Length: 378
Image: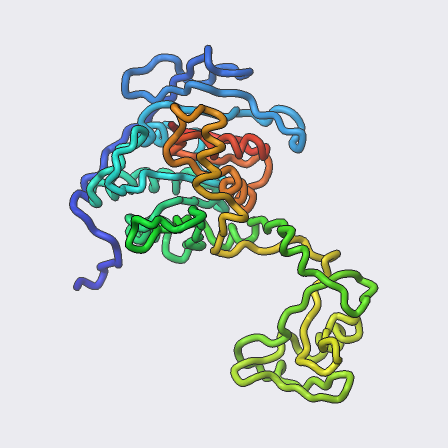
């Protein structure tokens, strides 16, 4: 092993990447809406075609924000290359649903590629997506078990392992597949940031569900209203958080082995004086800290996304059937609620959202409804 050797995923043909020259987009003015053509209208058969374009207007931003939404038809690698000139470090969220490489022959995708060919297909596209992302931008990739773990290592190499955000598990089915040995009930959503410290400063939290809101109670008639409580202990050892707590009825508590109190004693005393510490209905239980509904701004996302919150495959198919009819529907759409959560977490109104494997167009449709600007490559 040489001193400078790095940890990486290797495969046959990895170094034989296509040499891409700068490209231009060709606009079809008959399909554009409300926008003066900005790109060349002359090209060749290998030039991606900008088939639809329109000015973006947002009531939150005040009128026209400049470059309009874009629907691009053609080879998505060439189209991504064409976007580099104008959109390098402009995209806030790239959300892609690439072919899963399952061995099935889909009408819309050549989805039966051998593993090394599939990785060679993905590598240059992810490299360009990385260059298109803003410093605080993120890439979200839906994928299944067939290539997920190889794709994770490939993205580690391109983005840097420290910029890996999460592997979200989306519950895509509502019941097991009885034909399978162990039925696949989920897909993965790999999330990578351009710069994780910047992304952490910008990500949005989620609204609470009805079920979560119903957990707020007020058993002690607290004048601040309904609340929920959390353990006042935390894992670890900090000498200034190892004090003794005495309950209103005289019972004494110290942190459990391997734990400490969540706050130093002076902070605890302030919380106690404000009525934010709960000792149970008998006043003698281990202390817990209250969080009031009136002060809650939402909840942080975590990596388990059940279909009750973000939809499932059958829901997505119904949405697609309603638009295109059963005969012409897309085979593997994603539910709108799933894309809505991703776009909510990763962006704000007016930000650019890019989908370079547009498929049924769900990403663009949801981004449009949420007042985001969008680019779709189909």
